[in-house]
Amino acid sequence: MPSCSTSRSVQKYKSSSSLTLQDVTDNGSKTSNKIELENATRTIESSSNIFVSSGHFFIGDGGLLSNVQMGGSAVGTLQTVTDNGSGSTHKINLTNIATSLETVGNIIAGTNVYASEFYGDGTTLTGIALSSDLTSNASRIGTLETDLTSNASRIGTLETGLTSNASRIGTLETDLTSNASRIGTLETDLTSNVGRISTLEGETQPVNRGGTGLGGCNTGDIIYGSATNTMSILSNSAATAGQFLRLNANKTAPEWATVSGGTGPSPWTTAVNDIYWNGSGNVGISNTNPQHSLSITGNTHSTYFHGDGSNVTNITLTKESSRNIEIAQIKALAPNWQRN
Image 1 (spheres, rainbow, N blue to C red):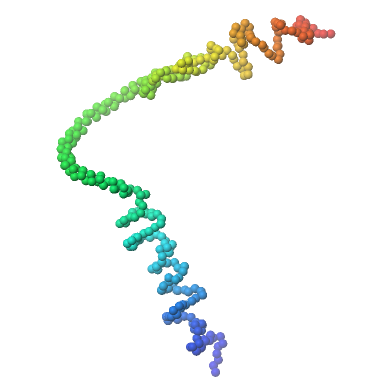
Image 2: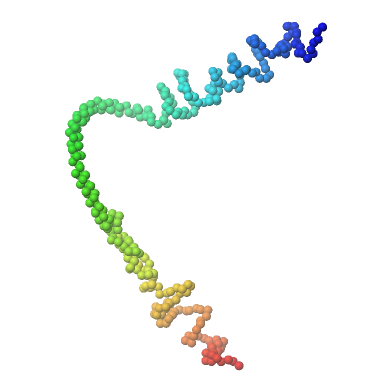
């Protein structure tokens, strides 16, 4: 009896009445035959993926499939198509004879939009006459038609006028030729205007032409309006150092003035924090007729008085002050005297 290899695959053999799909595919899961499934409810059910090799397709109604990207000749909704891409270079024809396009938002067009009729509120569109304006134009349009009819004779007259203009145009050409000498004269006038412009630059312009009406002024002078359309000069030579500018009593012109109480520059001289007087006259305080270097009418208060007080009168001396005066007199008489 021949021997058998224990490693060789042994096909399963059963009676045809007890074979299962598992038994068949255990022996081989491929076939070149067409397999027809005739269960009217559910012909195939898989707990994993079903694959179709490249170049082959699922054929039939796939309307109950979910999560399917529509493409090719497949029919989907406009939403599924525009989810993949909302732009197209093709012309889109809408053939519904009632309402071809309905939108709840704005329509933005890069070029023209054509339709046999547009419906809805168009009051925000520009370049369109309102229906009320068109209605009120009815009478105007009627009048315009009448005017067009009556214009026939006017247009005929105009044509005649154009014909008769030939001689006028000829005359104009002749005038252009004769203008040569006139243009030459104009050039001569432009040349001779150089002197006129120079003269104009040297003239004094009045106030009503933007000038001052004055021949000139010096440094420090003040120009003011002395009357209507009249300018005058307040010369700096009329002032002395230290004077100030003010309006005159009639408030009609400025004038130079000195500080109140003086007739010229201040007689006082300042040196840092000191002020002094080098004049030859006397100084009076509340005294208009000073008889001494300093004459004061009224009381004078000071912490100390220094210097010779021998000419001071009406002073009541105390005992101590009398003794001090005597000592001062003794020292004055005998400056080198020393007490033993």
